[in-house]
Image 1 (cartoon, one colour):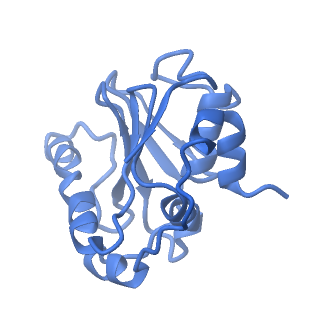
Image 2 (cartoon, helix red, strand yellow; image 1 turned 45 degrees about the vertical axis):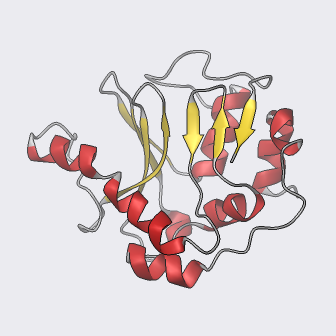
Length: 177
């Protein structure tokens, strides 16, 4: 069985060409301590394989920097400010920001303001669905994890409700850093 990262690399060949030679050593316990929770294993696997990924100058998945886990986790929490404003204005479709029970925690974004969150609440982070909030106010969930969602959006197997259609093709340029 292929790993989630292998599937992602298969649908986005330019990504594999940019994989660093060495696995990135991230102190996940330190990251979780600042964040106040653990994160899903597919995100950990992606983060250990790649620094921050930008696809097509559009999609950005920020990953922790080894040795800067505190700063990286704090950045994830700061990214919730938009959701906090939406929730206070009753425009978040019933979603609330983390650390509230079942709150959303930022995991990716696009340059046009579409946001991807994990819906926390389950004690097992691997069971957290990803909530997509588009700039057009479409909100929907994907229950198979972030890497699965991104793989499906790029391959066309997951419909890009409210996102640009087609989302990004397999030939999208990838930058890591």
